[in-house]
Length: 515
Image (tube, rainbow, N blue to C red; front, side, top):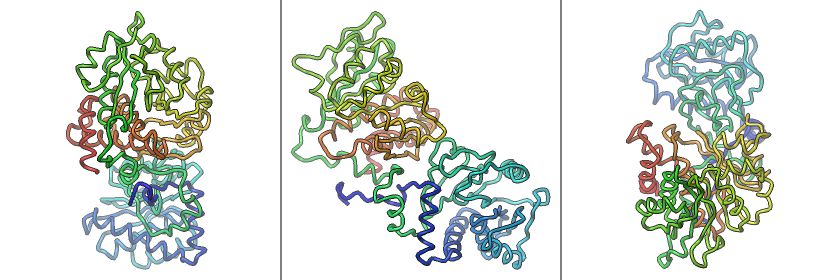
């Protein structure tokens, strides 16, 4: 597959509840019997459970009134036939017709069933099939009490499609929710599973592909879906590799970093080290004059530009060497460690016609001077990379209940590509195309990690500035590369041992492992 022939895979596609319902509707309208699909899905889940759960162990099956409960009942039957001890918890007075048929058959096989929690026997594992996608109402009363009881058992719980009680699109908890050890997402990734507020409930999530025809998916979500997961395939297709054998440094991008202060000299170093790892051809770093020697010692290959500084040690104004102008650079990244005493610098770079990344203090200055609307007037790309607090300061009127909608709204308001950092980083362009990074680690929740990302992202954007690669794809690639370095570092150093400086040393290891 060439970089010009990037194919969106099912692992990348993310759907809402309404989209999944439409896709399933097309499958059934084409002639696929619901009962056949249920058998297929449950068989695939049973195969996975058989790999995980030792034969002969006791498995409790939690059955809801809809087709999610029907899936769970077929799993109960399959595990029963494969030699497991199985019991069923089914507290509902009415079931959908097909689910009721499976329930009757399970009873005919002698699989014990119970309607009350206090009558349940002990078990080793639980399979959650209480509620599937599309749940909108809050769970209350006896079912809420039952979910609390199952969570308190401290057993491994395997949820079918998504943990019962989670909103399919937002990941919000509807009153209460199952805390799954593992979630088997059916067919396509549901948006709610990729939202931060769902993380403590889904455990390890994996996709169970039951062969949905791509034509049905494309009809509903389009050939290029609006919401996608970042995957290794995306990243490899976007990286500026392989390089032309006759390239040179002036063809590999020139990045200007504007960062650091006397107080936060380390931010400039970390941002520079992130940029170095990107492979950018030329790297210039503008810092206060007093910390220039420090930057030279850590980044000898970079052109360090010492700038006049304020009494507090912040850059007072840019003083570029010789005939260099801001337009001389492929990309400018501005913000880490600047302090808010560098307001004129941020105003100056916003007025430039160079692709621009604003991070950290540049975002705080932007929020303070309230010039967000001016970003829409820029003729070139702007990337904003706020964490949660910075996002709230920049966009106080945007609801944060659904992070995907929040980042789409912010991008539309500013005309910028917005990268909302977090455990599930979301990236949106102004047209609402979203990438979600579904793999990360809490090891990255340390000061300086974001500075490394800014440098890495700036270097990648500088190398692709004159190409046709969508900006949001490059930002997504930098995000994925950064998080994979954190994951790799945490595996070797534990989650407590991944400081930002160490993180920079794992960026190349990721490329070695994945390219």
